[in-house]
Amino acid sequence: MNKIKVKLNKYIKNNEQIVCITCYDASFSKILNDLEVDIVLVGDSLGMVIKGEVNTHNVTIKEALYHTACVAKYKKDFILMADMPINSYDDPSLALINAKKFIEEKVDIVKLEYQDNHEKAVKEIIKANIPVCGHLGFLPQYATKKEEIKIYGKNKIEQDHILSQAKKLDSLGVSLILLECVYPELSKIITDSVSVPVIGIGSGEMCNGQVQVLYDIIGISNNPPRFSKDYLKGSDNIASAIKNFYNYVKAIQYNK
Ligand code: KIV
Image (cartoon, rainbow, N blue to C red; front, side, top):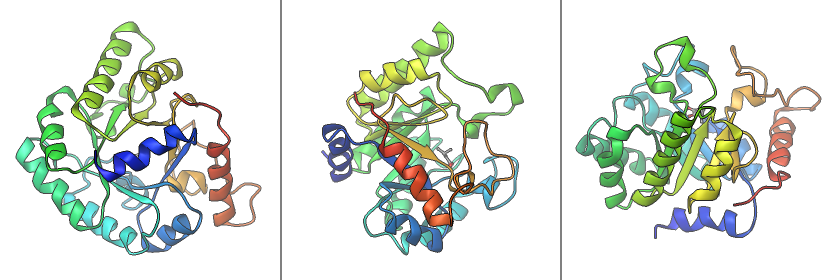
């Protein structure tokens, strides 16, 4: 079993919630490291919060690697996760080539938005001993219509599909599953059904941890999602706002 999988599984064993926050530069990376955040994600949300675009569709591998290198400058204790951008894992050999580029930038685990046609790409990356996080539910890279921004898993067809994808990812050997905008009851079923930790965003509290976009937490996003909260309100400074989010997550009482 890879070292990251062992490290992540310890959170389940110790009944401790995982705190994951996005980051795109060295200054915030230092703050997140000092606050002992568990996972720092170089998200392709950089398309919106850094580039000012409406979605993640134009984020390139070059941009993702650049921001990853900036964040890696202050990596000490946290697990560094990076998003593989759109089109960077379309086929298994391309997926492996690009996953290796992130590993060269000190990334511990790569994340990809999983659709059923990505099974071979996931297998190929894991075969090379590179830890993978599978992102399920709302998949921003593939959303082309407004109506696709919604809660997933309210009906039986979606429930069965997302649950089967989670079980498939678990059987392929991923180290982590991330649920975005998944109906909380389904998040609970998935969390209870797979062997690896599950972290959620806009997916309720019945997971093994929570992930948020940094700029939503500190209230500077242009278009924050409804489920996010501005922790800077009522805090003295940015670090204490992030700490308040951290404390909120660590106090959640849920374990598989
Ligand atoms: O890119 C990102 O920031 C993400 C989070 C929304 C989970 O994938």
